[in-house]
Picture (cartoon, rainbow, N blue to C red):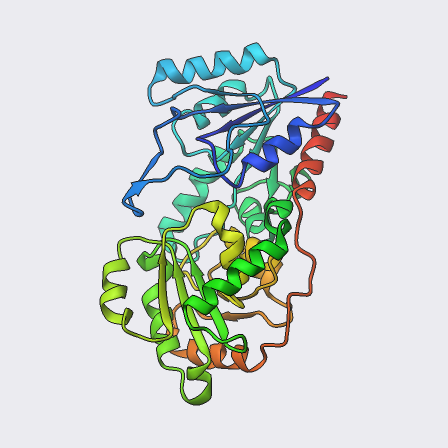
Length: 372
């Protein structure tokens, strides 16, 4: 039996299905070590509320909580991992407290694997860029193998000094079964929501799903929709699903707009329905390492409008019929792109979407290779 130790900060809705899938392997045993306490990340500062996900995040795989804010906790994490006697250690992110300590502690004795979705920061120039690269080169020399999530993430690992032969594609994916099941019931519920919002069957619905903060540019998106003219204006709706620091400003400005709607924070179990309400997911952030909402929306049949700063664009948006990319720093150009997408509403998602097995299988294959 091959054993894989996984180090992550806390239960995350996107990671739990992967951990469950890995735990189902008949030839491998995993144990997830969380470096924060069980209730530590419950309060979300930007949502300004406790966020308790209504899907199981700790079921179906062995796990422990080993808080690592101080040195004793970091040493306890390393001792717990050592007691598990893994053939490899998979670390999610090096920056959280205790993670780099763990990587350095086991470097040279147990293979260190890494999972992250960082991309090269194009805003850094000159000495700041050189200093950042040197620091990351030092961090990643403690990593024996990294699983990159897409094109931009691979470029990042190569930029930090990792070698091509030490990188394996394990693309970002979500639990496809969760989003496609109960399709008839969810579609019926989505139609009821559209009726309640007075959205005609032939109208086009744009969906913003995420935190209402400046990085996500919700205000600029609302302005672009507000600038639509003529028939396009009359048959286009924008729904904001989420909350955050810009919510009050957005509501004060657009709450009376007949085609701009606010649904507030929606828990994870509700998202498959909201994606069915929509025709187009809008992710127009100034910076986004990946954008897993794009995976979710595509599975549910949406098209995508994404900015060029969204990490998944080369892998999931570029070349996909009906989906488009816009410049993150030129929101004045978005209106024309939105109008074109509304006019061509018959197009649908066409390229394949990564599934969880495409993430788990490379990790299991590497585990068997390390342990052979």
